[in-house]
Length: 411
Image 1 (cartoon, rainbow, N blue to C red):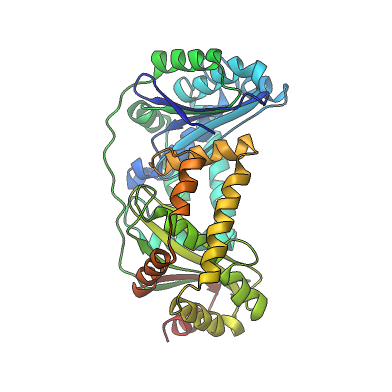
Image 2: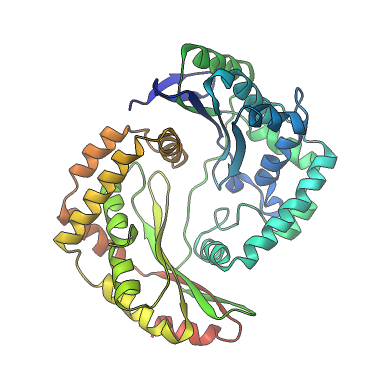
């Protein structure tokens, strides 16, 4: 697998040619997300992502989707705190239409008032859904209480801010930030595909100078939010990292995360679920940027098992990583990367993830070399650095138990 890079009018085309397949996966990466919004406009980037699918200068809402779906393809998008990504996958012989549709959605959406008002209503329902999904809510609560503005805000915004958004703000935001677009292509990337992508970017891709926004942290503490009709405690605990995807320690952090939380043989799963039966599931949740990140652990447990769960997690944080666990994490990570190469979608996602973390687009072979060089000593040192720092704890808990949960965590 080789990642090729071509400069193209205020952006780049990152492509992975795989001649043995008959499909093409494409993504237009717009370097703007919720972190670019003013506080009173929270949800604006996400609203544009929704409204862009309601019609463009060339295509109405139905035709946009129908033209790709009728040939077996798909079209979608998502917004993060730093990016808005529009993507499609189609049979290669329909690549021209996919490129045209994606470019229209990104560069020429109508963003009509009727469509904006309709999507505001949809997003408010989405916000309600997230708030009633306790796992989603505890993740938002972690960001709200641990990160400074603008990264503390949820990508979808708040009901109150979304309701106040209007077409004037939508158009101004799109005009200010929709430029410097990069493209990722994987699969049957031919000369014709590259020529069409270059032509689209040369015709539409403006140069912009967005403000540089740093990720800043609030002091670590324990925060609980009560919810009615809830019988379990949803917890995230974690701390900040001084390494990101461009750091020398990133491969060691990947090994550490794998041995802690990937697979049924991982340390957290074996100890907390299999040996003690304290949870149904326990996951490592990480967020990484270019030079910093967050390490976190999510679990859901009953009130009568909470103290034992906290006790065990704190015990694990005081223990050294064993050589057997290190080998498990390293070999599993390398194996998963190798298996990823059999899937175009996985390769496509791998490149996209690296770019969205603002990291260097390393090939799988290059990443494997870096992981192979990771030592047990380095992983142990990294784990000690993480565990010696104060941890931030948040919980979505049964209403009325907030103070008791805080005591159980802090005692």
